[in-house]
Length: 136
Image (tube, rainbow, N blue to C red; front, side, top):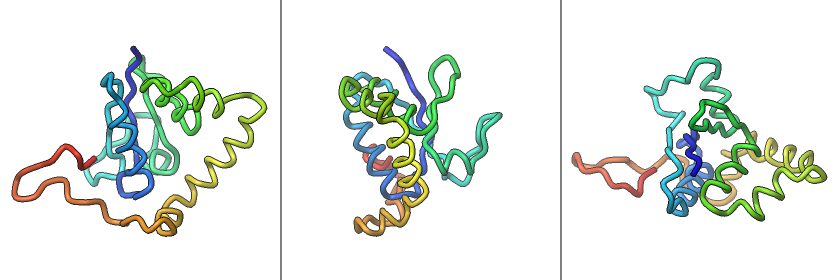
């Protein structure tokens, strides 16, 4: 089983919802989540926080980075949904279109979140010292 650390923008409602969905589908425990938008987040060497917030970054257990559609494809494979979705994302004839579509969505993720009626502010992680696992 492959393990991935996902660096995501928790302040983005669309990103947060998708990561929450993927984590629910992760029955193998293959995904570790890191909130790159947290005030105390320090980006790993060689990657800027801005880059991590602009495009999805995933790091495998060997320390290799996957970014954008390659990161998404790896995540889908890790949770057992790679046969169709991951293949379509990185299939050579579709790859240029998928890359452009991903960048368009990534660069407009806050706007798209608003169009979808998603809350901009993430829910509190803890209330009264009690933290719930459903707040990713």
